[in-house]
Length: 264
Image (tube, rainbow, N blue to C red; front, top):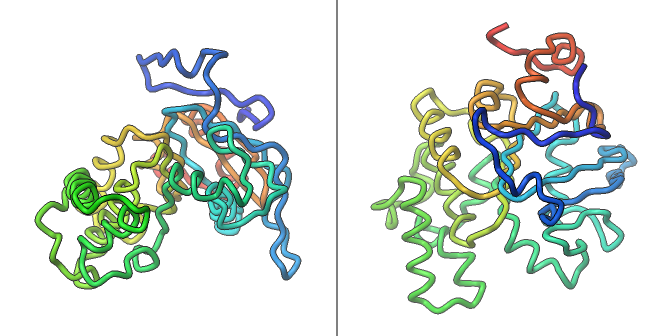
């Protein structure tokens, strides 16, 4: 049987043991207790969502279209929600006074990089966050160069963002977030639309990042390769939360929630 969100377990990579995930003294970086959300038109997108994410966890968020994944992700840095939100990030309630701090801690990468890249050049896009955060010019340049190096895009500083390939745009989008040095990365469908080479480069990039990570995806190969824990949503509810290998092995569970394991 799949592991429900009421009895979620935290999985590790085979052969690895992270004591941080087993210490009662370590606080979650994200805590959600009973989150409900409806859009202004009355559509109920989230129902009693409860979730705990520990430091350093790598979690896949899966489910069919319309399951509520993107809506949940938009709550994690305050794009959606209000001061009554049951979401806490690094111990901070998601209130107006804490939004600047929370948005610096949670880096959100959208599915479509054109929603994230709006400056004339790659450098200006990646430097935008630190620059408007009031950092000195030297540190802004240092952070932008470092972030581009992390995603394999050094040397593209003067390129026009809209002339890049989709894979390159996605990597630059991640760099715009990394330049803010967030503790948590939240990515929406990072491999969508990529060709095999671009997909592999992005998977290798994500695998090398150290931040706590929550990634929404339909790419179950990606899930199996990178994410020890899988959270499954359907119709606004968390219907499964547990070790990826266990949930992947339950073909009836996958089929019931609109998922198909391609190696089955």
